[in-house]
Image 1 (cartoon, one colour):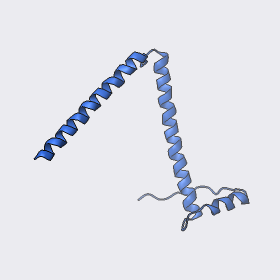
Image 2 (cartoon, helix red, strand yellow):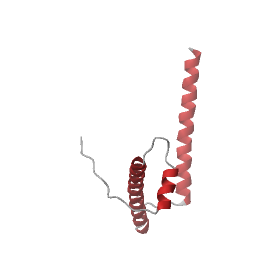
Image 3 (cartoon, helix red, strand yellow):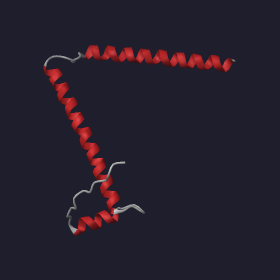
Image 4 (cartoon, helix red, strand yellow):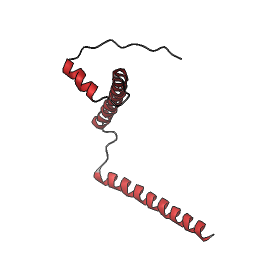
Length: 102
């Protein structure tokens, strides 16, 4: 089990503290609220950093001419995926019908 760490105390305006205390859920402490908020913000920023990284890679690929599709290629790919999905649905319906006949 790892030891817990303490975050530094923060100063806020009395109005901010009152607003915060007004939205606490029943049985929730100020400490629990702050810990939850910090964890959510850390997760958000990690996801944001990953998204920016992916966008940068996509822009680089686009600038170098890689990974770009024409509208016709995009439509052909979508039609192919739709066709495969229709086949999968038909197979599932047929399989279900065979089981019901037994």
